[in-house]
Image 1 (tube, helix red, strand yellow):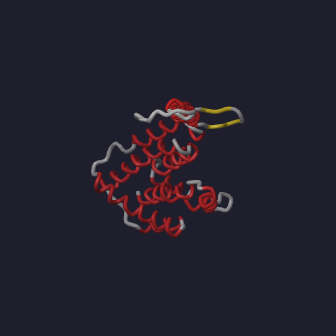
Image 2 (image 1 turned 135 degrees about the horizontal axis):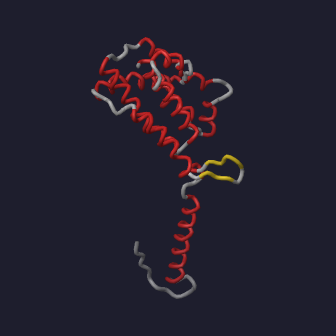
Image 3 (image 1 turned 120 degrees about the vertical axis):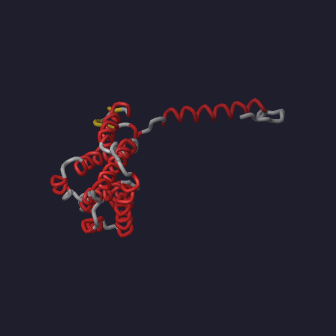
Length: 208
């Protein structure tokens, strides 16, 4: 950036303007260094002790990678994506009505068979395997919870997974959590995450 100024006499001439611009930019640079990798990239397990992002993020990356590996075998990606659409439509309806229990309607939906089921399962692994590390950059505890739920919902045999599905997004509406109040009052994204992340995962698990 180049600045042109007309020289003038007095205390506020070209030299003073240059010093002002330089000092302002230098202060912004110092502020940027202060804010670089700001508070949400650190964990504070005890007062006056920080864990930097480089120490804890690999755990989320490895967790996401372990889920992603399950999605490498996707014979018919288009068919798998088509079977995923009802899950996200139901999740959107649940969000509009603020009722996670609407996801129970997925129990009556048709279920994919053969290669379509295998493809839908693979795409679900790929999607949530990518979401876990990304979410870890914003909220590490929620990323670990998502990763744990994803592994529980998708990895075991179907008969074990059906028992685990008792861990339903409706649990987020319990008064002890009050995630909706946090969302409306302080902007905590856990409540939208119930409908955008957890609910479609539950629906897909119940279908697959």
